[in-house]
Every structure is written in structure tokens, then in C-alpha cells.
Amino acid sequence: MIQNYQSLVSSFNLGPVGGFLITYVGIIECISRMIYAWLLVDKFPKINLLVITFFGDSFAHCLCLFSFILPTYEIIPLIVMFTLAGFFNAGFSGLILAVLEKISNNSTNNSIKDDTFNAALGIYMLFKGLGETIGPVIGGGIIDAVSFCPKEFKLDDDSCQRGMVQRPYWVVFAFGSSCMFLASAFAFAMRHTRSN
Image 1 (tube, rainbow, N blue to C red):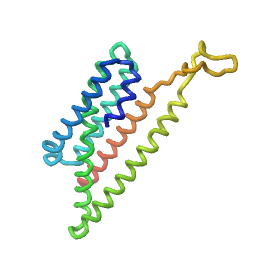
Image 2: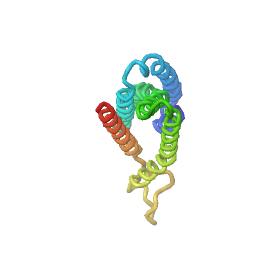
Image 3: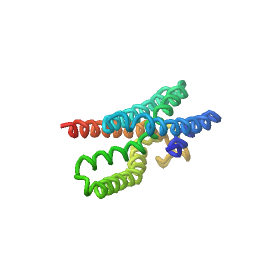
Image 4: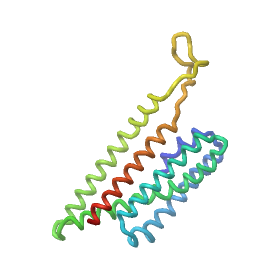
């Protein structure tokens, strides 16, 4: 997931600190994968852990909004955000496979569980691919819709001077975090449905 953070870090013009943050989140993600694999996935209810992971990831990305809102303190929320987002983001990989395996095992008898898991994995990969394809289009559309040109940079033909369009990227983080909170609500509902 590190590649997703490079443009975020470069948008803050942090200089060498930006390179440190990218390295830092990479280390956090490696540690997180080991913690999830060895300490969490098999010891706690998987769907409950999925709810916590979705919620933690969305909360972490909400912290990034403070970096946009409070630019004088941008490094502190970014470090906390990278710590939490790196931890929860990296945990998704193995956890989602464990959840799919649990769902497919509980929903069928043992004679066809491999086929059910394969179908569940295929559906997950389909929607993951759709999300990765449609997400940037939606994010770009949101940015285009809320971008504006300050009055002092407007030209006579009502166009904007080159490079002076203001793009409030915090809107995309707010939208993305809201979608992650919605996903945690769906996972919570799934947990409640599975327990009944």
C-alpha cells in the first residue's frame, strides 16, 4: 500500500521528512503483517477483527484531514496517521482471506467448501479490482467538482492562470474515510447477522 501514500506525502512539500514517512509506513506495514498473522487472526473472532480493522483504517485516514486543516501541525497527524493506517491497511490482506474461509466453511458442508471458498475469493477479487478501478475516477470527479480558481488568478476570458487552480484534496479524504466507516458498519452488520 506504500505506493498510495507517495503522492500524499509529496503534496505536503515535506522535503526529506517525506522520504522518512514513506520508509516508516513500510516498516509499520511489515510489522503489522506479522502481528496480524501470528497474534490476531487465529486468536480473535475474525469478523469482529474485520470491523475493528475497517474502523481503524477509516479513523487513521480521518487524521489526515487534520493535516490539511491545521497545516502548521501537519507532521504530527501525518505520523499518527501513517502509524495507524500502515498497521490496519497491512492487516487486511491475510484477514480478508481468513474471513472468506470462515464464511465459506460455515455456509456449506465439507464436501464443497473448496468450491465455495474459490467463489468467495473470486467475488472479493472482482470487487477489489472494481474498487481500484472506479475509486480514482470517483476521486478525480470529486476533485474536479470542488476545484476552483481564486479571483486574483482569473484571466479575462474567465479561465485560470496555469497551475493556479486550487484543489481541496481534503474533500477526497473525507469521502474515502466516510466510505471506510460505511464498510465498517457493513462488517458490523455482517458480524451481528452471523452471530444470530
